[in-house]
Image (cartoon, rainbow, N blue to C red; front, side, top):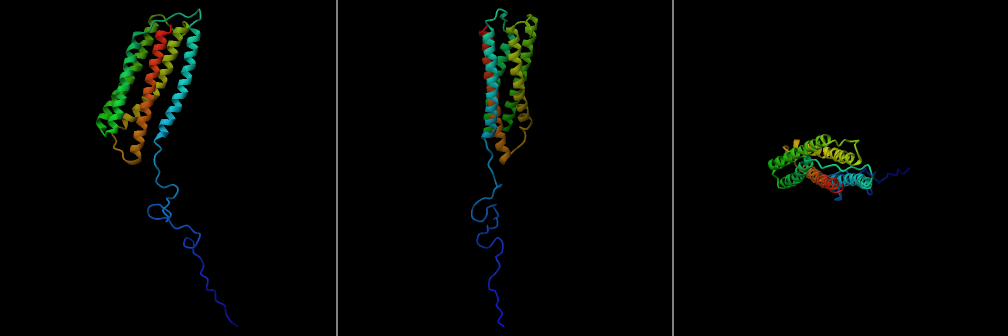
Length: 223
């Protein structure tokens, strides 16, 4: 009886037709295409987009408060309150802090880590000084007999400054985080994240600066 011997060779996984080639040393699949999960670039705009969304929500809240302020200003119970002098000081402090924040961001882009830390620390001190002067302004309001539940105008003084101060505390926390880590030498992805973080935090800080100036003018001019 004739014995029939098969000449077919079993196809081995990974080398036959239709099978993907094993990955190369650089993480590619052998055809020049990188595998999923390989090197990825950091999305630089992710922090900034998050801050823009946060700022949009803050703007909507303060627009609603400002609208109520303007409407209630025609109420017979409305009694104009004199602007505390401490708020003039706080306005100057937060304006200067925007300049120092800009300088910190610029020094980081130039690779001057020492100057970056110095400007960032100065920004932090100015922010703390701003909150301290706001508290001093509250004391001056108390001394003038303008209390939280006194009349609508005095109530909005506390409401506007308190809400702004709470949101500024978030910015101060972020600046503190950057200042604490400013002495670390970072490379690669960590360095990109630091640049993205300072850009986003600087944007938020300038926004809080502009927001306070708007509130200050509203309280001062619309009596």
